[in-house]
Image 1 (cartoon, one colour):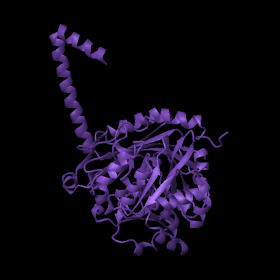
Image 2 (cartoon, helix red, strand yellow):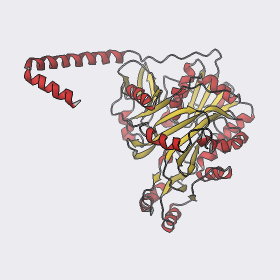
Image 3 (cartoon, one colour):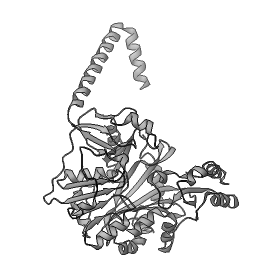
Image 4 (cartoon, rainbow, N blue to C red):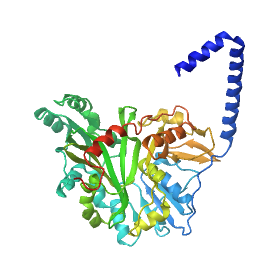
Length: 484
């Protein structure tokens, strides 16, 4: 590239007329590009073609906060009827112009063929409705506790024979601080118990061998955090590849293939900045591998007893010493479900209807890899009413009128105009696929470049660690069905 610039400079200096022509052409090109963008912005964004179902059903989505609108919208586009309930007042305008939203959900129970609970916390309701014969996706008392209570989750992992890391649970910050002083080491600090989703991102990975960095963090923040977090867990830190495996469950068995995914949880490239939950993920679909066999498969019978239907995932640290499960996710992941939709070829409405009925089926998926990137604006990942006020109703524009790989976050569409809704700043998820990770990256980031939102930001390195991560996982045999 430097050679080209040098060549152009030499040419322009030797012939001033060329310089004038080049500048004029550049100006004309810029004007034409601007006109093209303006024309495209006036066009209604074109959605990718969706196969319309021949057997439409009625789906009721029940949410504490706006999470599953992208999935609901896809099912609606397949020709099914969809109603959505969102409890959070801050999300009341999310999905306006996209979904049929209701003010309360229980009067619509008889209307629905399938009720979808998209987060933990609905376990009792889900169990009660299943006992009455309703088709339910998501939620059970048992799986809620697996995810919400880290201490319970770790005990269940150990009970069924998973190889867990040493961990210690506390009900006060003072007792956790004293423990580290008496037992110096590298720990991971995690909130536990039934907490708001925003508090789940309050994690800290200790780097100091004597634990002094974590001690300082806890001492400085104990008064603030103690108001929000009543139970905490310290887990011995292990170094390795963080990888998750997950699968859909029909109440009786797992549905294959499984999903193997690598989350990028911090805000900035290079794993810098605060935890966000997830800024992007690399994934692929696979037949059961060694990680699945040594983790999720071991707890299958207990999931059967709970009658849970939905997606369940377990993330792990894998290294030469073994596979160490960290925590369960007993619900759809966000943005995981949107990225999975990039790779799923089955009709989603039909799939979830049959899943809720307990039918055995195979999920049709693409070969290769899928990548998803979260597009955010301020105040994400924080709560800031002033920033929210500035960016609310901000326009979302596309340079070319195509919605390939575009998945909605907190968005509304009024008179064909896409705008920011809610208060989170979680705008879009952009996905792409490829036979190789690099092909998936190129397609995904090409689609990202088509989006125009003022002050949007995203990670540019999703999937870049695949080469080194996969080398270790392949060497240890963890990505295959049986380790020899």
